[in-house]
Image 1 (cartoon, rainbow, N blue to C red):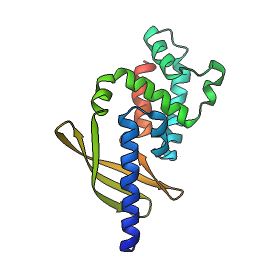
Image 2: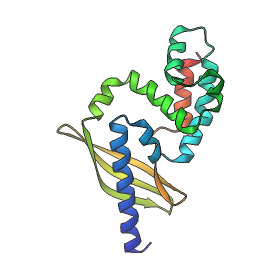
Image 3: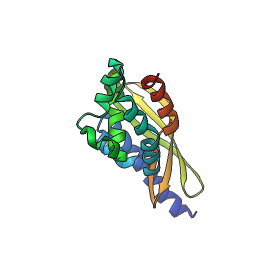
Image 4: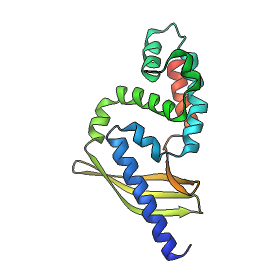
Amino acid sequence: MSSHALADETKEVKETVSKYWTAFSNADFTSTTEYISPLELAALKESLLPIFLEAQHSKNQEVISITSVFFDGVAPEKRSEMSQKEVFLGLMRFTSLVASEQFKVLSQSTIETDQVTFDGDSNALADCRVMLGETPISTILRLERVNGKWYMKPEESPIDTATKMRSVLLR
C-alpha cells in the first residue's frame, strides 16, 4: 500500500472508530449499527435470535421479562423476521438496562485513536485511548473492511454472546 493510500485508510479507520464511539457511548444504538460490520450483525442475528424466540415461551418470569425488553415494540408474529439491526437493538436494550451505570460512565467518555495497524487489505487494529474523566484506558479495537467500507468488529464474537445469553435464558 502506498503511503498516500495508507494515510487515507488510516484516516477512514480513525473516523469510523470516532463515529462508532460517539454513537455507542451516547446509547444511540440505531446509529451504532451503521458502524458495526454487517457480517457481524448477520452472525449475531443467526446465533442470538433463535435463543430469544425459544426463551419467549419460558415459564420463568425473569426470562419473560428479559425477552419482553429484547422484543419491545415487535409484534409476536414478526419476531422471527427481525432484521439484523433489530436484533442488535434488542440486545442493546437489554444490555443498557442491566448495565445502566456503565452506560452513564460511558456517556462522559471520549476516545482517541493513537495508531492503526493493518493486517492485509480487510482487517485493521486501532490502538485507542478512552478517557473516563481523568482516567485513560488503553484498548485495541478491531475493524474489518466490507464492500470497501471500514466497520467495527465487536470484542465478543456473536457466538460467545449467544452462549452467554443461552446460559441466562435457557437454563
